[in-house]
Length: 377
Image 1 (cartoon, one colour):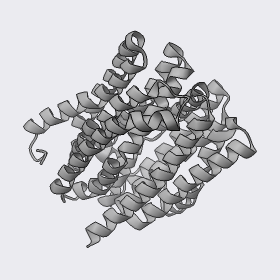
Image 2 (cartoon, helix red, strand yellow):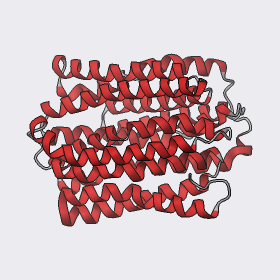
Image 3 (cartoon, rainbow, N blue to C red):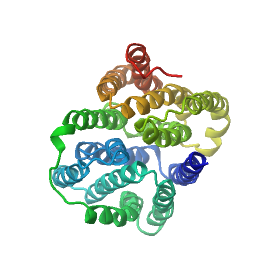
Image 4 (spheres, rainbow, N blue to C red):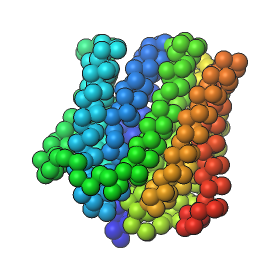
């Protein structure tokens, strides 16, 4: 019963919260031209990469060590806050964008807080904070667009993370800051930092490559397709957040994971069929997005399988395998976006997006064949 309650809390929060976020981004896409949408994605990508460099204590590490009640947490919080302060100065000096700096802090505080909440298996608290942040994204984002300016949207996104300031303050107040026991867990922490860093760069570097290579118009169409693919992965990510702390304590949910993969296949099929019918009427400015979405939504399948391996490997603290997989994804993204994008335009970018998850998933499967205790299924 507790399992169903926890899964239900995460599911409701992610479904409603990400639904609100999706409504916001899709609605903004109808208001902005593709080049404006592309520029917005570009600066959000900068904040995302900077946050990855800052989060020495990644959300997944915080989740695992909170579940195991390890003292090293105070060290991770201390290091992460020092890192984000340095990163914010660098971003401010390089881009002169205070809004990007504020969004950077929002990303970091929310990751630390959510790791703490999930590690304690406080799923009802998770749902409250996620819903608050997502609903604020929708309400503040649209309000800032109409009552301030389209250029102020990133300030609105940063403001949506205000609820996490409250829980972060409570966490930090109970913690004795310092560097306690960090050497005992240094290998796992560093490898997971590298995993998160390469994963976040993989998720954002495409925008930083596409803008100078093909321009903001192409980036805008590509970003819209990315939003569709992201929404399609909500269910799989919900399951991952639920299974990670359980995998960390030896409670594997293989049947649930297999059902998740079957649902991912169904989502991909529906996406391919419905995209040509819905996109032209909903987003008439984004003429290049239809076929792009049909290709990119196929990524839901390898991405879902990858998340299931990710949960099990992390729960067993076999982060070396995950690190190699994420590095493979990063290299695949950089090479495929640069080459396929240059020669085949936005269609090439779509296939590059799919390849970025497919290559690591194949590696995880092969690794699971030789590692004890991590066979899938």
